[in-house]
Structure formats: C-alpha cells, structure tokens
Amino acid sequence: MNYPLKFSFKILAFAPQISVTDANGQEICYVRQKLFKFKEHVDVYRTKKRELLLASIKADRVIDWSARYTFHDAEGNAVGAIGRQGAKSLWRAHYDVYNSAGELTFTIEEANPVAKVADSILGSLPIIGILSTMMFHPSYVVKRADGTDVLKLTKKAAFFEGVFILEKLDDSITQPQELDLLLSLLMLNLLERRRG
Image (cartoon, rainbow, N blue to C red; front, side):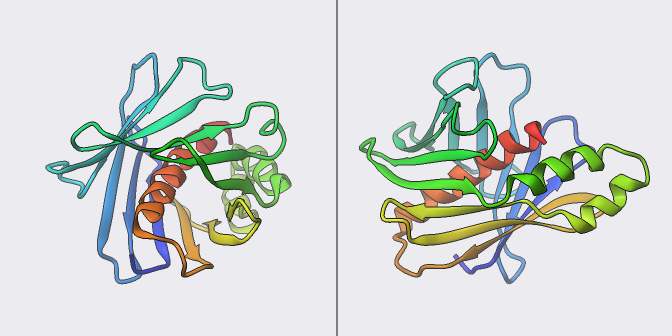
C-alpha cells in the first residue's frame, strides 16, 4: 500500500461508511456497517460500488464490552481479529490485534485521550463545534509486542466529513499483517466514532 492512507467518513449517512484511499488518491477499500444487527457486522468492499467483497468483520457477542471482532476473507476463512480491552479502554482506548492463529501481534492505544474527550464535547456544540474540529486531533498508535511503533492514525481537520490519516512508521510490516492492521483500524474507527 502507498502510504499515507486517508480514511474518509460520510457524516450525513444513514449507515456508517468509510472510504480508504492511498497517497495517489486510488481507492483501497470501502466499508459499510450493517444496521439493525444484534451482533456487530461490517462488510469491507474493494470499491464504493460494492461489487467485490474483500472481508467481513463480525463480533463474538452482542455487547461490545471486551468483545472480539474476527476478520473473515471473502471465502469465510478467519484471517485475524481485534479485541477491545474493556477496563483498560475506559479512559484510553486499548485494542489487541491477533493473527489467524489467535496470537497477539500488535496493540493499538490512544495517544492522547484528552483530545478525544474535548473533540467529542465541544464538537456537539453549535458554532464552537466547527472550531473544535480545527483544534483537537485524536490519534492512535499501533505497536508491536516489543513496543515498536509501526503505524499512527490521526484525525485531521475537516468540516463536512470525518478524516483520519494513517502513516507508516516501520517498513517491516508483512502484507498479511498490513491487512489485519487495516481491518483493525477500520473497526477501531467505527467503534471509537460512536464513543466520541
């Protein structure tokens, strides 16, 4: 993938949607969350036309407190998972990323929880909310088990859409790891967006 990647949210959409493009503006994938499901279910497509399903993400339980979201390829095979750490995530979001064998490979942590809280509170106020999008930029850092930073996802200022930029900090990520991390960060965006 050609970094940095841009995650764009439709703000005025019935179902949550994310479009991911690379540094050249080429579409990487498109996500549309299914509504009215007891368990979380997200489909990831190659393009906005939704003709080619790349993956699906399904929760292991109805309530998302410490839930694990498993990634399945187009054939239905499990290729990885992300788990939200309930108690650890009360103040600072914390997620664990697992490979297809169920081994912990990466962690994702919120870099500055104060920015998310301020963005959420001030963003809901008229007029001030417009200015808060320019001031507060929550970010998330992906780390290996040894603590090495590999990716950073940062919210950027935007008025009519939600925009996050994904930067690569370590070139040693393999292609399967890259897919797991992309799916993990898409799910993280959907979950954290709901929380503020």
